[in-house]
Amino acid sequence: QVQLVESGGGLVQAGGSLRLSCAASSSIFSFNLMGWYRQAPGKQRELVATTSSGGTTDYASSVKGRFTISRDNAKNTVYLQMNSLKPEDTAVYYCGAWRVAEGYWGQGTQVTVSS
Image (cartoon, rainbow, N blue to C red; front, side, top):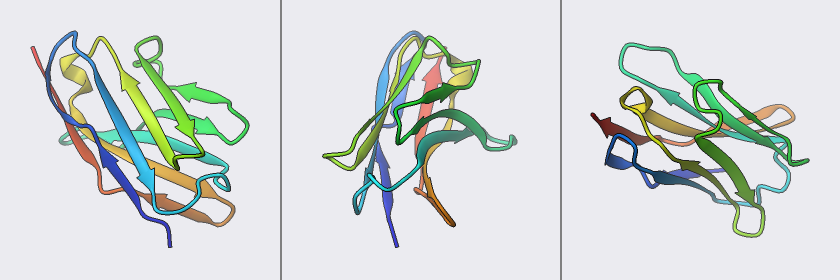
C-alpha cells in the first residue's frame, strides 16, 4: 500500500503563487502516471495536470501556461507550481498515482484564492 501526502496548500491573493508537494511513502519510479486533480464545492473532480514516467506532461486548458507539474524520483515527490492564481482555482487539490492495476489518492490539500 502506498500513501500519498499532499502539502503546500493555503490562502493566497489572486495573482499569487503556491507550490504543492505530494510525497509518496515508497518509490514513485514504478508509477506510470502521477498527477494532480482538484475538486471545487459542488463540482466534480477534474484533471489539473499529469506527468508520465517518460516525462510527458499534460495540463487542463484552464491552467496551461500558469501551472507546472514536475516529479523528483529521488525524493519520491511530485510538485505542482501554481502561478498567476485566480479565484476559480479555489478547490481541494488531490495527488494521484497509477500503475498497472493500482491507483492511489492522497487526502487532499485546500487551496483558496481570494479576489
